[in-house]
Length: 172
Image: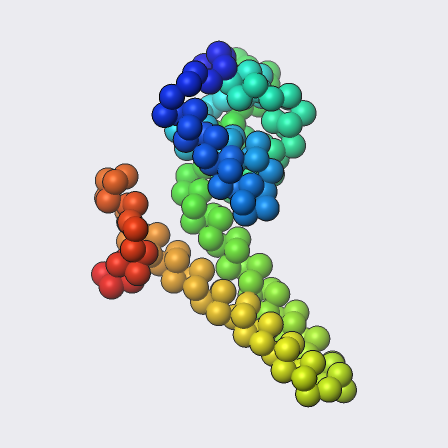
C-alpha cells in the first residue's frame, strides 16, 4: 500500500473523484483521498496516504480532517500502533446527505427569523428573502427524499446502485 498509485483504472477513478469534489468547491486532494478510501476502504496511516497519492503529509492532514468532519472517513486506532489510521466511514453517503439536510433546515430557519425582522426592507426585498427561504426548504425536502432513496439501495449490487435515471428510485 505504501507505493505511489500505478497508472490505470484505479488512478483514473481517484483522479476523477478529485475533479468531482473540486467541481463542488472542495479541495481536489480531498476528492482524491475520498476516491482512495472508496476503492480500498482502509485503514491507512498518514504516511501511506501521502506516499500513495504523492502529496504532502500536511495536505493529507488538512484533507483527512475535512473528510472526517463530513462523516466520509473515520479515525481508528490499530492495536500495537501509536499513530492514527483512517478508513471509510460506515454509510458515508448518508452522512453527507444528512449534513446537507440539517444545514438547509438551519439556513431556512435563519432566513425566516431575518425575514420577520426585515419587513420594512420593501416588498421586493421581502419577496427575494422569501424565495431564498423557500429554496432552502425545497433543498431540505429534496435531501430528505435522497436519504430515503439511498436506503432503498441497500442489498443491491454496485452496478445496480448506479443509475442514469435518479427518478427511477423514487418510483420504487
